[in-house]
Image (cartoon, rainbow, N blue to C red; front, side, top):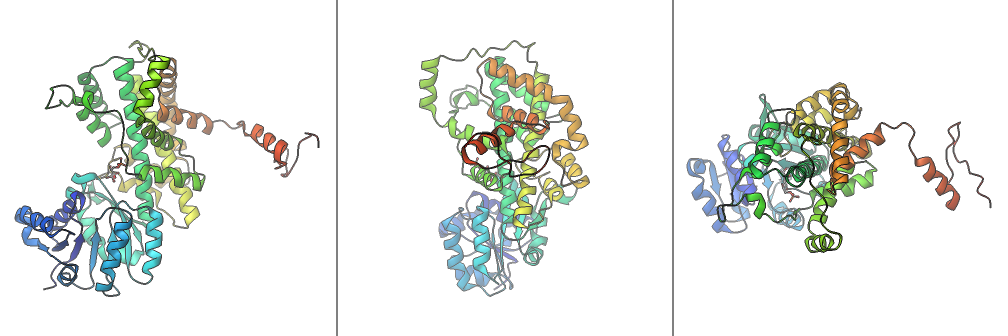
Length: 466
Ligand code: 6PG
């Protein structure tokens, strides 16, 4: 019986949560997993929602259970598994059935899969919000042909998070546009998390605050301009106790950050686009560096630990908060700048204000500030966000604090890669005459590359001799 309105393949954590969300929103869904035991367990655990779920044991059964024209979501690990799944599924489908890859795909792979699909419908959608988001309302960034998106938009908007009643699910553009926007989301996520971790480091090592005081500080910041999911959970992480030892949870977690790679993709792509995203780059580098634990320990033994203590009146908590506000604006300005560059480069017409809107709820970087960013981008999508009146005003007020924090951290031997790169970006972006004239002179000296003159014309050479 073909009764299901949609199908889903892959009942891992995210797939299972998304399937329940779809059922919870009143849609009948057929599901299939590589291991049937998992499918059965999922159906058994679905409780009252089980009646909306058709568990299937073969791909043929899955396809037969879905109403035509079909839509099937893939929630399998990014990479080869997606290609394998498409290859197994496509021969069973009709020409107008849609395959939707909702995993964290590299957008170049999505571009390729769209091309390989030819006239057969394929969508690549970025889904953010972790397990809870997938279950109760993620942020969804769609990519592929608009007509295919329109066919499934009623389901995707129903299951998405809502901001003041507006669904956080938007079509971003053709091909891999949805997965591209998701990658930039993750790049910003890395930088936002890194800046928070840097400020945590100052509170812990510089100001000597205990975990409770740190948790309370994040909780109080979560009531002000920094209000966001990441600040909220940082407070909760700082305040948690390890059930095994009774120690603060943070004190038993190894200081080496993992990564699945989406932040790295953002940085690689930013380099291809020549889009400056230094805070995101710094955040990826910081994760890589964090993994070198033995080398860091050897460095501390060789050079001695830094003299990290900072007096509270030198860096009050309010200064730290202001610095984080400045850092956050600068990091988002970079991320949106990269999206704008990609939009031109790939001919996608990416909707910058709508991207800010879709990130207001459901996703990991959701925050109050994104609402103001959406307004600023709607006023002028081509202007660097740091120049928009609202954010320029906030930066005028807060860049001094960022400077204070970066300077004190440098003096006391604490690394702040993301915050200091944010400050360097700010200073570079407000310097009308920079220093690249020296680089152009050097390039011309050793390679006769030529330079433009301030008094006009390009292709000039200096008097360097023959
Ligand atoms: C999201 C997250 C998610 C991401 C994980 C882990 O938007 O829900 O970005 O997609 O994959 O949070 O990412 P890393 O392992 O790269 O930190």
